[in-house]
Image (cartoon, rainbow, N blue to C red; front, side):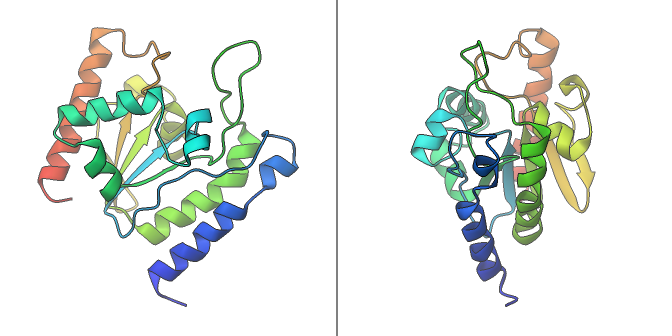
Length: 201
């Protein structure tokens, strides 16, 4: 079976049926979230879905998603068109649950990432996007091995035949965008995305 579409469909079945993190007690419930648009020359990789995303079954449907699509709208990429043309996924696919003693979501653990990452690597291989948008520090670290967003956002990286564009996480709780220099980094990252899209990538 060499048809890429059939291979992707088989992979998606495996992802949807995966219960590994739930069985190990890492997460409250396994309900994988992603939006598999293919074929697609663009892919967006986030950190992990939130509660709203788990309930809707779609990535970036909550507050962070509203911020993210506001950024894209500024460069002429409306949410509806984006969702129809970009393969959207994340480093881990299930809501990790709440962070203890806070109102925020817990970040996925290394063990959870290790269980889910093989799915993501296979997705990238099968979809074969030309451009990958990495949203948030976790995705940037996993794929570019960069610890500080200041060293990544606003730059274009090329590796393994693909272009990688880092963005900060659009969570309203993030303070990363408070400094003016970081806002400038975001504007440059969005400019790069617009330039690539206008060029037909």
